[in-house]
Length: 136
Image (cartoon, rainbow, N blue to C red):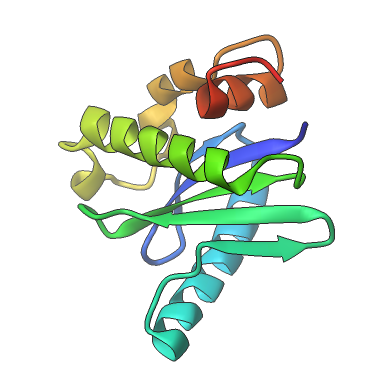
């Protein structure tokens, strides 16, 4: 299973990514931010899901901060399950870092401690454990 999780500022800058892949984060989050912003401007609501070449991108807007969350999945996950767990992860992230999010200075490692939500043998299993509470 190939999964990635992102916390993204309203301007498209990656605040946190798991697993971390270097420049991948900037490219994907800038793209996701553009799609996200266009959907709000054109349709008056945020995009929640997008499919591209066998991959699904799921989005969730923060209710408390100028950011959104994105998960990239290989399409083998039920949307209902993913949405529920994404909500839980977003709440945990915001609860743990509520004092730091608005004062963030651009260092993605500032939230590295959040990796504990994804710790397991490999990256896919880590995210599956956090998203679904079980190994995939």
